[in-house]
Each structure stands twice: as C-alpha cells, then as structure tokens.
Image 1 (cartoon, rainbow, N blue to C red):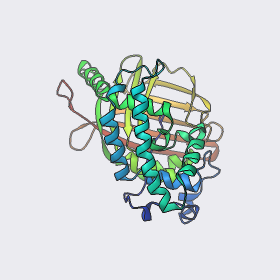
Image 2 (cartoon, rainbow, N blue to C red):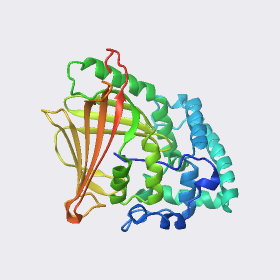
Image 3 (tube, rainbow, N blue to C red):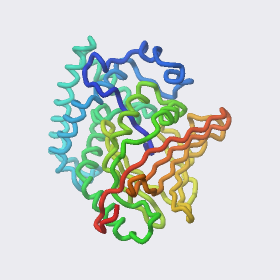
Length: 335
C-alpha cells in the first residue's frame, strides 16, 4: 500500500491446513488461479511460509514482542548513530523467528538455512518485498527498525489525528480522525482488483483475511495535504502523505517502477482522489484510483470509506472495491 492492499490466509493455524503448493493453485477456479503473467512470483517454500507466518498464533506472538520492546524506538533517528539496544532487540526478534522457522521446516522437510536464504532473496527483490508479510520483511534489519518505530509512535500518531479532527468539527467533509475497521468489504471485487494488478493467488488469499483486520487507522488532513496511516495485521504499518494539488509526481510503486501519481480534494464533495496513471500491471491508459471520503452508516455512525478503482480500457476491465471504517470518539465527542 503505498496504497497496497494486503490480505491473509485461512483462519486455521494448523500446518496441515495452511500448506500451499503449486497444485493448490491449479485446483482453484480459472478466475482464482489464472494470473495472466504475474509481475511477481513466489517459490512454493516462501508461499507456504507466508501462509504459516500469518496464522493467528504467530501474529499474536509477534504483536506481543513489538509492544513489549518498542519503547526505545520512540522518536528515534534511524539515519543517525545506531543504538546498541536496537541491535539487541533485533537479535531477540531473530531468535524468536528462528524458533518459528524450525517448527515450520520440520513440517516441510526443509532447513532453516534454506528458508533464510530464500527469505533474503525475496527481501532483496523490490518487485516482491512489498507484498510480503511483516515477519519476512523484518528479517532485514533496516525494515525491522522502521516497523518498531511505527509501533512505538502509534499513540503519538493517534493523538495527532484526534487533534486534527477536533479542530475541524465544523468541516463535516474533512476526514481527519481515528478509525477502526468494520470488517465489511466486497471480497469478490477486492480479489479482482488484486488479480488485475498481477498479485499472485497465494497472496491474494492472504490479503483478503488481513483486509478485515486493519486497525490504527489515522487520518490527518488540511488544505494542502492528507496523511493516511494504518496497520494491517501480519503486514505491519503503512503511511502515505499526499499533496492535494493535482500535480503529477513520479513515485515508485510497489513494483519499484516509477509511475505518475497525483492527488486532489474535490471542493464540492470533499472526496480525496489519489490516482496512479499508467499503472505498470495494466495495459495502455490503465490506472488505479483511490477515493477517501466520509459517510454515515445504517446505525448513524460516521465512517471513512476507502474505494479502490481499477480501470484498464485496453482490456475492457473496470473494478471497484470498497472498505469502510467507523470513526472513533474524538476529543470533541464526535463519531
């Protein structure tokens, strides 16, 4: 997400139900398994471990580790002098993961060395790394530091969003605030969106579960820009800031390919538009557009709606996927 949508595996955490192989993909219906020349691919071993690493038990262990060890990263300058305490925490994280890897490798007839080797290879590949669960990416030290800093500063980010919402109570179209997932979204369209952006089937399946578990959604919007932060279970925290002037700017997308991105706020509706033109996974003229706007649900709750629209005119494809988040109470008592 640089507006990457990330989902997850079947609810079961047992290895007998979480194994993945190429045969599994072939067993899917054509719509589910056909990737039409995917931009990225995963080895069977990494695909299986990605699913194993997004089990509930695994996710809970990692979350507990982050919460218990994130304090030294609050306000840290990661580009400055490296703190020896960070290294110690990272080494403890690696020990935790190594134990998990040994359990996985026993089930799959592999070795931890082989698994680590393949993880290192995909982490070094910018075409793949953005799609991977957090546990795989955090095996790389720099990414681990960034993730721990995000966790440590989560409360500060929440306070900023609450403050922004309280200041703008009169502007009902401003989307600043703190939100939590409703778990409600169109799974079929979400899968189609991922398929047409050439996301492999095993990760489309993973992403769908995770999309139901987005939390720590913080929006801070003013006249010139909008910052959107959120955390997807198993895949970590994401943060994007958009300059709302409708000017195209080169931006490396999740395939590490530069594309033109522009963002603006509709003055009449208040909707934030983020458009990626000439999407590399689509045909000529293909683009993705993300819309952010407020709405009221059937129970009278204020919600943030996030639409993901894909248009590929050369292939006569258009997909509209949507998810929503309930506005939490702010300092001003607004929902």
